[in-house]
Length: 225
Image (cartoon, rainbow, N blue to C red; front, side, top):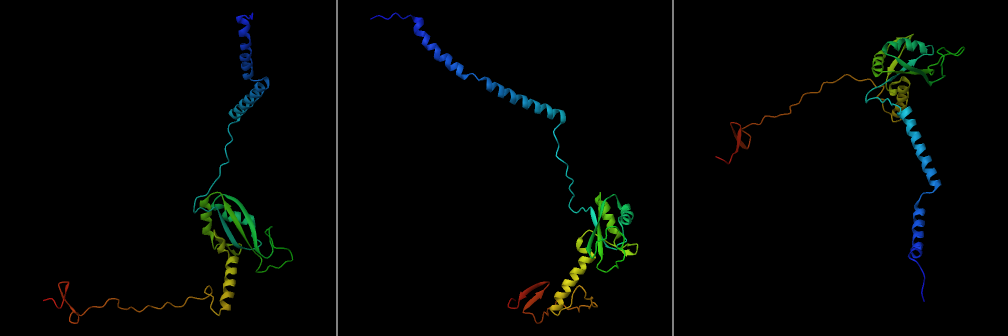
C-alpha cells in the first residue's frame, strides 16, 4: 500500500500549534486599555504634585523643659476687668489671651458686680494670662503682691499657690489634725530657737593609763621592750 503524501502536507499540521501558542501569549485589547488608564492616572498624579508641591505637615511649636507661657492671677474682685489686667501686664510682653475663671461663688464675666447682689467672701475668681513668649511670663511673676484697684493680686505659675487652693488644704489638714487632737502644723507658729549645747566629740587618751607605749606618734604593746 502506498501513500501519496508530500513533504509540504506533512509539515503543515506542525505549524498550526506554534501559531496558536504565539497568539495565546499576546495581551488582549482590554488589558491594553487597563494598563493605559493606570499609566495615565499615575502621570496625572505626578504632574499635580509637581505643580502644587508636596503638602508639608503643620509645624508644632513645642516648649522646652522649664519654659512657661502663662501665669495665674488670683485674688481678683468682680470689678477687675480684662482691660485692667491687659493694661497692667502688657508691659511684660505680648499677651495672647486672658481668660477669667470662677473658683467659688458666682461667676462674674463682665467685670462688674451683680446689681442688687451683695458680695461675699465666697465670690472669688482668678484669671489665666497667656503670653507669646516665655520671658514675658517670667517677667509677669514679678508682679506678685502688687495692688490693683484695691486688690492685692497673687501671680504664680503653679495652681497650688492660688489662695482658694491654700484654703482647701488648710481646712482639710486642720480637720484631720483636730480629730487626732494635734496642732495643725500649717497654722502653728514657730517657737523661739534654742541653742544646742556643745558636747565634746573627741577625748584625749592618757598615756599613763593606756595599755600601749606611745613614742613619736607610734604605739607599742607594753610587753615589747
